[in-house]
Amino acid sequence: MVQKSPAAADLEVDVVRDRPAVAAEAKRVRARGRGGQAVLKYFGLQEAVPLTALVGLVLVIGLSHPRFFANAAVVANVRAASFVAIIAFGMVFLLAMGEIDLSVGGTYGITLFVCAKLGAHMDMYLAACIAIALGAVLGLANGLLVLLFRAPIIIVTLGTYSLYAGLVSVISGGNTVGQGLPLTSSFFTRLGGNWLGLPVSGWIALLLCGILTVVLTRSRPGAMVRAIGSNRSAAAFTGIPAGRLRVYMLMLTGALAGLSGVLTLAYAEGADPSVGTGFELQVIAAAIIGGTAITGGSGSVPGGLIGALIVATINSGLVFFNVNPLWQNVVTGVVILLAVGTATLVSHGRAERLLRAND
Image (tube, rainbow, N blue to C red; front, side, top):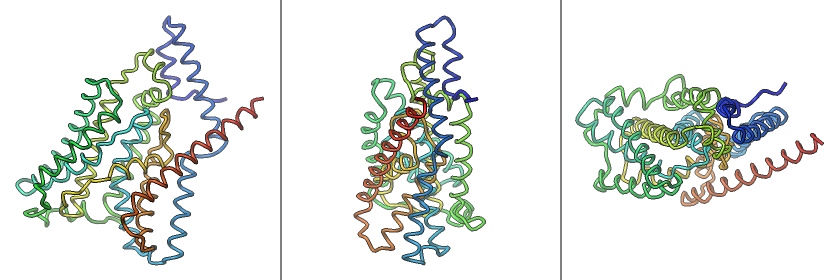
């Protein structure tokens, strides 16, 4: 027996109360959810394709350059991927709603610099907490602007992207940051170090991956997020607070960007004013490459982690193959196009097969 999807179930609970038109809309959403579950059951896990691509990339680079399998290289790749993945988890929630936050690179840079500035005058852990809270506040600002202007998140964050990036330059004064930091603090020696052979930031990314996967797939807020992305009109009819949820998801993404900035500082022990520039491209790429549809309605937090590993592997591969670093964004853009194109073709192919199977 095919089970109802959580999104459809939540919609159905609210629409049965004397709302025939809404009930009909929810029925259509439920039918789509059943079809999606049948697809996943027949073709396997949503993360199978990006995971296969990751394994293929690792083998191609590693067999050509055995040093890629060295412990130092593996740790460096995992660390770089963890900084991207932590923010990508929040982007997965937004994409599942059919939204994109372009300001995460600026938020990441601001929180890193604020943490460094405050850490020179107070306890580093307190400075880190303030920086993460600041990230949430910047996300809240994005959300309030979205409600005020009644505009898509991508439009509002296109403006705050420049605003936040400019604030990084103002805060830094055009200078690197890191002087006066208590580098002997456990904040740097522990959070910036390794544990059981992997970076601490990697373990934090894994922990968040598990927690947020449960939130997205097993909780009512996660079901509402996916319902909004599946059918915004039906979600509005059933009373799902789409505006409030957008604000919450922007705050979550901002806080995760702050956490990533704090962990980056713990490892790098400083930064230059260009930190965060172009970072949003890697975050969006990780979420999309990991299998989250840009059209909304579904998302994969583990896929975001796999996507971040793919992005880090590609960047590392460019170094091993002596490719000019200026080509990094070009290669990332090509990978995004391939991921979106492949996902679209596979989706159409699956839909056609399901239609033939039902005939």
